[in-house]
Image 1 (cartoon, rainbow, N blue to C red):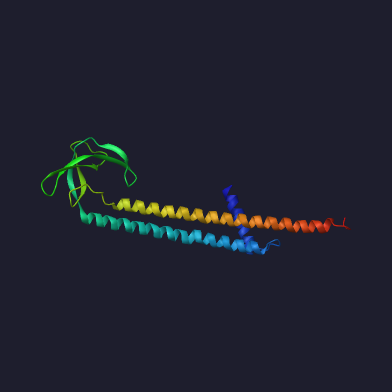
Image 2 (cartoon, rainbow, N blue to C red):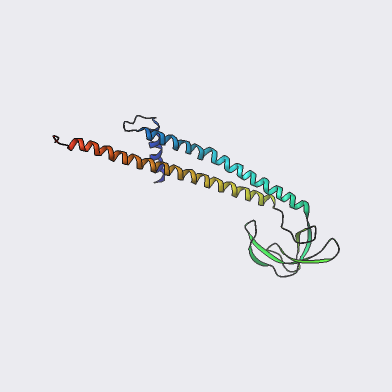
Length: 202
């Protein structure tokens, strides 16, 4: 069904552009066809380039953020003090597991806070925890994998929205043109019918 729909659309476009002889072709048909062809070119070239650019920009932002965070934070070897609990979703989209952890700060004092830990952690397990310069638990800098996933999601989202937007505009243009052509045809037919059925005819 979809193949037949696309085949019919391409056939109409070819006729409307004047690549084949079409005695009932109107000027508006050619204008609409040019507009649709332009939108098609945008969908196949500009939108993918925009999606790729958006993905690269998102990746660069993620890596800069990771570099800034890593420069002001460091990792400590912490011990899990309580049973880990699943509390929601982490920024990366997976399950967020948290537990109370303890470690020795730079000043030699014992520290304890609640932090995100691996799902396989148990009480007594040693886990790496990112802390800031004040020895407080800090967010984990985005990893390379996380950055790639975020960039890919951004690119795919932009691509999908761009293609849907172009498809929606193309459908709207075609619908408006078809409506105008139908009204024009009805008006012309009314004139012809009046000539055919007027006084002295028939």
